[in-house]
Amino acid sequence: MRDFLLWAGLAVLASGVALRAWRRFAPVSFWYVLGFPVKAIAVYGTWRSVASGCGLSRRRRRWRWTLPDMFGFGGGE
Image (cartoon, rainbow, N blue to C red; front, side, top):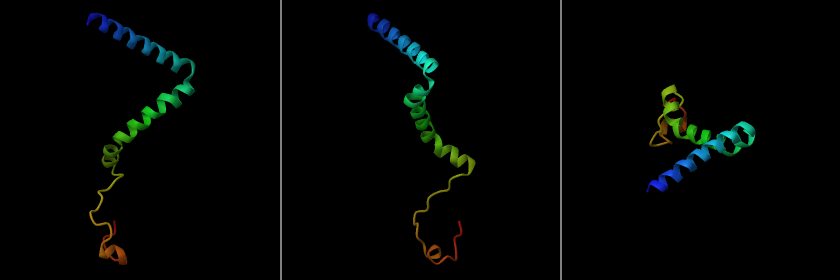
């Protein structure tokens, strides 16, 4: 078990050094391969709470087409 933890720690350390070097020496490819997808997933995952906190979203109605909405004289959201 101790050998496994030693090798796992070395692998994590080597990966971190390699990622930092990649980010330092090739920032454009790093952004396209890792930076942008990670940022997009983070924004997608937190968008609902951010949008509701800023008032950018509204609750979805259960019945989308109601009688006042079809004829244009009511509701008015």
